[in-house]
Length: 146
Image (cartoon, rainbow, N blue to C red):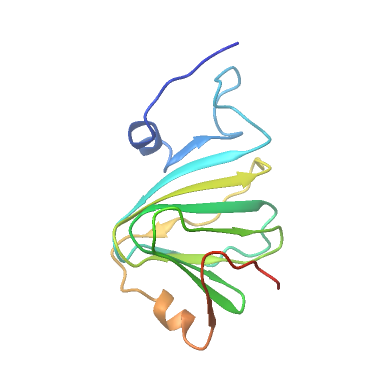
């Protein structure tokens, strides 16, 4: 059995936060086609450059620190307490905004080679607030029902 010991802050800095997935070299214990894991460090105002459309994976996003909003069709989910999380499935479009300096852990499955979307845009005004206008806000502990 191969073992890798690292630090998410250090290791994530070299791969836009991604720690584990198909994009790691074969033979690296962090290589996986089953799952991807990201340590996301976002400054207040960072926002996804464009909505992810036609998502082909399931995702879990857990708030470690800060205040982070995930935009989903028809709802806006605010993560504001350590441990708050949201899960969405395949086919669910999404975007996000860091309302405060935030650290989030994202797990996606499966790890899909060749699949990428534009990253975040640092220092933008917080367009997630405009996007969220008129959407019902979901709180942690609720499920996505469409």
